[in-house]
Length: 194
Image 1 (tube, rainbow, N blue to C red):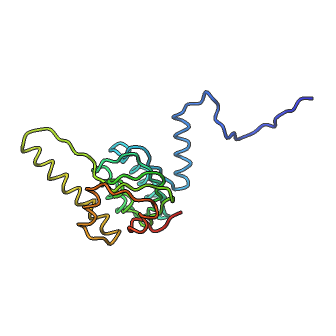
Image 2: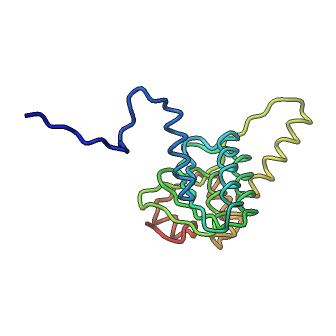
Image 3: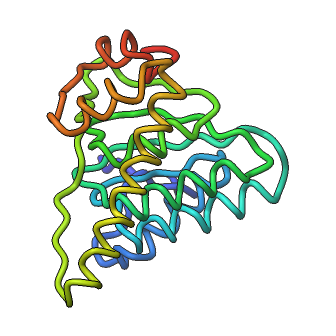
């Protein structure tokens, strides 16, 4: 006796020879259909631009909330601040959910969200990225000044959301303070734990 399998129109497992990039695009398209954007890995200029294009696509479609899932191994300060500034300009509200690790500069993106939540085991690292520059003394001075302005923007975003003094937040960023999900909620970074 042989068992026959009925013809299925959907398979949970893709064929072994299917293109991984096509699968990734399909997954991203399905998430976009649910108004979900993922930010994972290193938050650098390329990643920030990809996330921004998805947010603009969704934010221009209607004003229903967009859910941004954050889990970054590392984050560069300038792209994180640029992404946070873009979120401020979207007509649709952005709700952020932290899952995994969130390094210091990515906190700017979290703070730009209208609603902030995290999984209980999320880890928040209030820190600043290492900055290294090359050039003439004048160029180095200009870049150092720009870096300090960006640090001040990050500090001010966190201070505004948490209600903490700017000096306290800056001390925490410079010391590399680490917070659990519950501690981040008590600090004021989160509205809720999931």
